[in-house]
Image 1 (cartoon, rainbow, N blue to C red):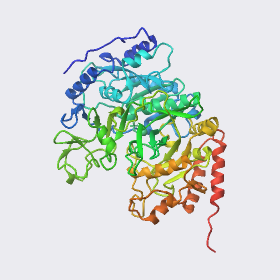
Image 2 (image 1 turned 90 degrees about the horizontal axis):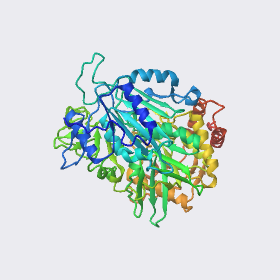
Image 3 (image 1 turned 60 degrees about the vertical axis):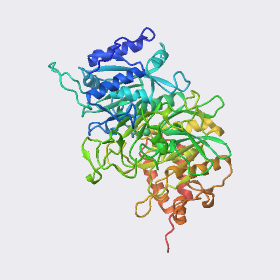
Amino acid sequence: MTMLATRTTPPLNHRNPEIADWVDDIARLTTPDEVVWVDGSTAEWDRLTKEMVAQGTLIRLNPEWRPNSFLARSDPADVARVEDRTFICSVDPDDAGPTNNWRDPSIMRLELSELFSHSMRGRTMYVIPFSMGPIGGALSQFGVQITDSPYVVASMALMTRMGDAALEAITPGTPWVPALHSVGAPLVDDDGVRHDDSAWPNNENKYICHFPESREIWSFGSGYGGNALLGKKCFALRIASVMARDEGWMAEHMLIVRVTSPENRVFHLAAAFPSACGKTNLAMLAPTIPGWKVETIGDDIAWMRPGPDGRLRAINPERGFFGVAPGTGLSTNPVATKTIWGNTIFTNVALRDDGDVWWEGLTDTPPAHATDWAGNDWTPASGTRAAHPNGRFTVAADQCPTIADDWNSPDGVVIDAILFGGRRPSTVPLVSQARTWQQGVFMGATMASETTAAATGEVGVLRHDPFAMLPFTGYNMADYFAHWIAMGERLGENAPAIFSVNWFRTDADGRFIWPGFSENARVIEWIVGRLEGDLAARATPIGGLPLAHELNLDGLSLDVDEIRGIIDLDKTAWRREAAEIADYFGTFDETRFPIELRRELERLTRELGPEVTPS
Ligand code: SAT
Ligand code: MN
């Protein structure tokens, strides 16, 4: 096995003793064989990936098809975020609120210290200094992740700005978030006996813990995605949402795109959708309608702050994409398929016999034979999925052919409109525009969506997922709603317009009515038409709806009645929805819940009027 050139002392530790002290403390607690400060170089990536190939964690893909790319197969028990094992450890349980799992911080700290005690025995402990957002940018934040997973190090190299450049920038006094991670599988047991490693070490006892007051993350037992790449959901959403509340900005589960109209007018949209509901597809949209251009800025997270001109500016704090592979193909997301040409880590997808990867939806014709995500022989006749539904690709954003030239700009882009969407087979129309910011916040707060494979648990169950932040808000959701209301007051007339969208309406046979994917450009065209003031909207209790003839359906062979059905207000369904929203609002503490949202609900109920029963 290749030996790592280790750097057991921080290269620049004289600059920030606070980091060095924390690393020493964690090394004493977790007792790894060695400590490696990650530098972020290509040589380091090469060493790490070679070592993981030798160890069996990674399979090198055929470089003819997929240069410098790898496949990882996780433990089948470690394939997604674990929401039931995710905790917000605020001093007061009410600060975590009714939508989070709460644990007492001092008790949790003790419990975690026991779990982490000797948890890295026999392993290497890596120290990853990283920046979320361009290093030194006004909207950026620093973190330092400690992990005993080289897979996490390689993934963080793609997903964040990490290594020496980040460490150098974290000068004494600069705030940084300590993010501790262990797969919880020591290689040496209490009797000093060394065991063989497994390809995907993890622990069935998983804890994803956040301490919002001290702004710390402790994650134990999982090596997968949002559980382990701590810059992503743990920092950039759960901890950052708390920072944002305290400092007057917003940390949101949103993609960011730049849209250019045929008249060369430029707009920036941010859009919140729950996990595995098409954010990456919308972020990389290849419009089917002539003259339109969409450029990618981010596909998962937006940090937004009012700029000096009073307008809301957004950055994508990440440096890469951790996208859902199944369903990503030439017809659904041609841009993503080009992005992952090489330098990509794939997880839990199928391996073709020629050494390339495959998953359901990549091509219309499956390979005649492959090895499935769990390592078993697979053929189209197997009757099982070749790739896990939450199989992923991890790739640097700058490989995306539609990435905006200035996606890296530390000042971000001015957001013109915010979109909210979920998987709703009924009720929510294709698109509607909020009359006011308050109605927009109501749209966000009342979002619901069918669950997906991005988290463990049942798939396809409709649940409330306000702002697509249900699993990601690091504090009381009612306070988060109030923060949205307050941000609108602060932005005043500079506030972006807000829209609700739903690509997922189905017919009686459960088939999607709207073609979605690239055709969503038609909805974007309508939204831009509204921003420019060119298009009218029908005022309804649920917001402004398109006039059927103003939605561009040229070249689509769709049943016009069906389309009318999904762009209209379904009053009966909405009366049910309003009653259900009233119940939902009742689950929040009345003293924290913003009055503006209650008023919006009253208004909706009043405008819908009572059900007229035929006499
Ligand atoms: O949280 S992950 O990064 O694993 C994926 C998601 O849920 O969006
Ligand atoms: Mn996400």
